[in-house]
Every structure is written in C-alpha cells, then in structure tokens.
Length: 111
Image (cartoon, rainbow, N blue to C red; front, top):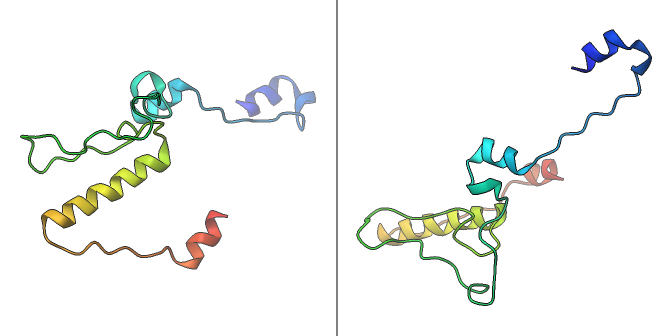
C-alpha cells in the first residue's frame, strides 16, 4: 500500500509511518473470542478471588482452559490454565508433573 501511495505521491516517500493496531475485531478474527474480549469476564466482588471449575461432571477427560477460567483473564492466566490442565492430567495418570526453566537463550531473545 505504501508503494502505491509513493507511486501516486512521490513527495511522501520517507514521511510515512506504519503502525500496527489491534482492535476488538482483530481479537475476533485471530482467536474467535466473544465480542473481541482481550481478557476474560469482568472481575467483581463475587468472583474476584475465584475461578471457574476446569472439570465438568460427566465429561471425562475434558478440561476447560483459557482466558475465561480466571477473572480478569488475558494471556498469562490463559497460559497458566494450560499448565494447570497438564498438572491435572498428570495427577489422573499418576505421573509426576515435571517442569523446566527456559534455556538462557530463550530468555535473552524475549528481552
């Protein structure tokens, strides 16, 4: 698009700034979340220190994970719920849950 703009208006070359913006519709397109919510449900006095049950009676082998499990939601709690799901699976299978720290090079690349 910028090339086309420069072709039409050469004087703008070097004066264009591109910014990537995420909107609620971006969230819907990439993740399918309800109404573009980037976090889960709104925390309130009744649910601030609670989370939804990850297991549903009658659905053996099924575990809920994601931003809608913990009030406030968002990416970190969604990732944490994935970890909790694996811990539950390990418990069900009577296996030890083993975790490791990321190698130093991963931490360095993350900034």
